[in-house]
Image (cartoon, rainbow, N blue to C red; front, side):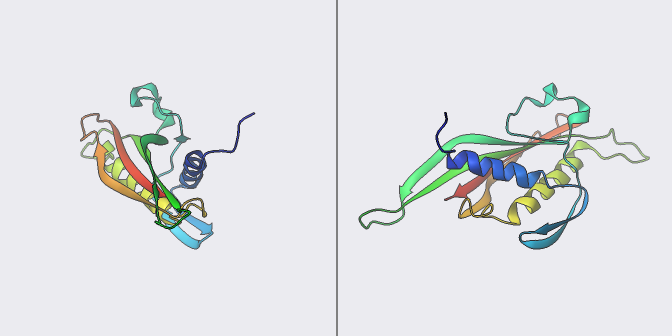
Length: 164
């Protein structure tokens, strides 16, 4: 039998659950009470990522919530007994499939990535404590993308710093 679930795992599950609420159109949240407009509807939310080439087009857009190797436990006070804080990084990955742009329209992967990233950022900043699981969560560092080299596919990765 497994012991208690590590904080890292609990937080990743909470992030995946929040991201699963993203649906194009208006989404009303009760906790906190808020209405949000989303542009995309992710088809797949996963904590077990594969390379983009291993997904079928009908599985996209996809959001992955994956662990990062960085974690830090440090004292928050110098009193005895010390109070410790825990910081760790979770990576949010997005995969999309765009249209081949034509004079009649079409949405290329670069534009779909921007919409998906904006929806993710909106969803994760509604409640930065993830329902009280952590003290704060926020994006950190630059958003890494494929720079348009995978068209008509696209991908991005953003690190999120969580503090508990």
